[in-house]
Image (cartoon, rainbow, N blue to C red; front, side, top):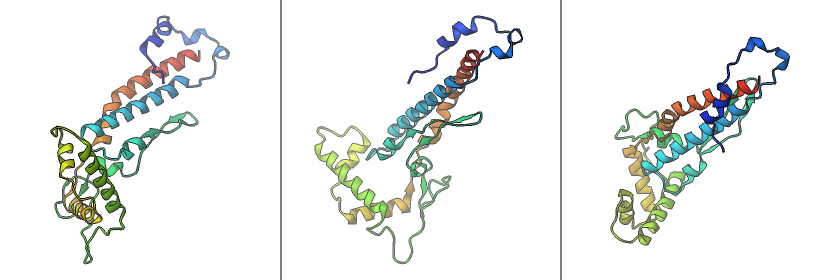
Length: 214
């Protein structure tokens, strides 16, 4: 998608515009085409930042979360233009973390694992255990196909994975719930990183659309 640039504005801004010198009938309908392009550009910038942040904190396993981040179609309601970012719902747990029922960490997370009842926790049929088992299998396979010395923390962890059984997945799930899930702020930070870019894009887009409607 082509980005809006200052170069598009220069030919139009180089001449003075006196709105009082034009008859209203000479104005064309304001379509907001540049604003729509700007919204797509902003969405793409946000997705790029979120993806980079997720990769930097080394929290990509199956790639499902990364692949789920996509822009929606632009919605127009009256004079309001909006665009959403689609993402798997559990992104918020990766972003804000989840408090461990025993550790209470991360303390500022709005989410928390429940303390296990008398029957224990993490039954083998749970989605969490199933997901962890698949992760163990995938990470273990990656470890067996790697060569040379481990160069990253994730590669070191892979080499320690030798059991991909359901029992091992249950143990991992219990440990996560007890100790908590660290926050990454990958989504929150992406919003902050995109703010200045968004302001610039929208500002330029509005000028282009206003000039084109004269």
